[in-house]
Image (tube, rainbow over all chains, first blue to last red; front, side, top):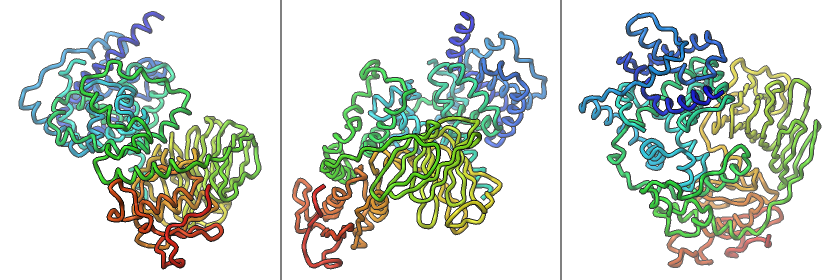
Length: 179
Length: 419
């Protein structure tokens, strides 16, 4: 039982670091366009179906990103994937981030800035509180005097809108910030 | 048609993905939630794809460092002033949601730069509406008037009859509103002049909306789908909250929570269903989506709405955000025996925002008269001069509002009997 709790804590921590594996997923296929994600997702989906459901339920997001990273790196290198079943592979996910060059960072920042500029100011403010201040949506709703439902809806809708506006390259700027 | 369904499927997947990502950002999930996430991911490649996309967005924003360089970063404040109406109605929604945990005490761990935002007045519901100075745009004036109308509304909403029923017909008279708990635990709110037929079987919960409008809060039971039939189309839900409305030439389905699937009948007959074979592809609607299905057989159209605002009538409120008076009056009339008639087309085209008691059309008429007065006919506090107000005249169950000459001899500004 103790290990489960510990592993849960570690996963929570991992999730805060999840950008790492995501970054890997993206770096493995630098040219990945928006359309490619559909293809990758198709393969990831098929693999998810092959796993035992109870295994997946242990660490769903970790499995998902690991599989996504595998699929995209396979696509890039055509190398065979390692079986992600031992507990060790979780360790691999928490690797130190590699800093990006200044030019690379600036160009991706500009992309995100452009995407954010298309959103209403109030939406941007909520996103800023969430991502820059690191507040939870409960805290945001409290500070802004809005209901959680509204804050949640604003975030959900802006994520859904931004997913089209932010090209895959832009996501690579992250991973440097420590929570 | 086909692309519309696919499009809405992707949008839905993206929204659900965003909810998961938001949930994951808060920390680790419980066992039940993890099961739900796995099942959701294994439901469709679309879900996987949108989850990856949204996760990437969250990741990109996490790493973003130029928040301060965004345009008009300080101008947000004005935008917030439009929120109170919605915030208030959603608050009352929240209080019904027992699963929600109470927030942490205000002020704990508050980051430095939030204090300025706190004084915006948007956390105080209607109070903030009474202080026009907090509104930097003309639009705020309308809210101020809405508050005045709301304050004048002494009428308390009627007491709703609650009982249990397994089958049969439920109906409301004009001006009546009812909340009924069905035997399965689902709750039905019936608007004015509405009628539903309930037929529960072991494997299915069948309902028909015969006329009017109803809101359903469905008790979850995957083994026993909850199906509402309206003008031959079927709305199918498992555990969710949605509204169904019959209008003169169409049926409207609005989802507040969860997902429903709508099977649009092929040959739309204005009256009843039995024959019309539903179309092969059901339309999936998520929270805050609304589909309008014209009786004439034109393709259904889906749009995004604020579901909670649309369904505010279940709490006795009507909420409008910048809508033409004609539409607002139509909604009022749907909920009351007393019918408002706007006789001045220019007045009918005026746009209205505010929160009103659904059961108090008289106060609303007073609001129209006040709001319909040109700014030049107001004193320095914005109070309209009585002589310049559009006239209102009551005849039986009708109130005519508009230009004096259009309906009656010149009797300025007379409202009907007191509530």
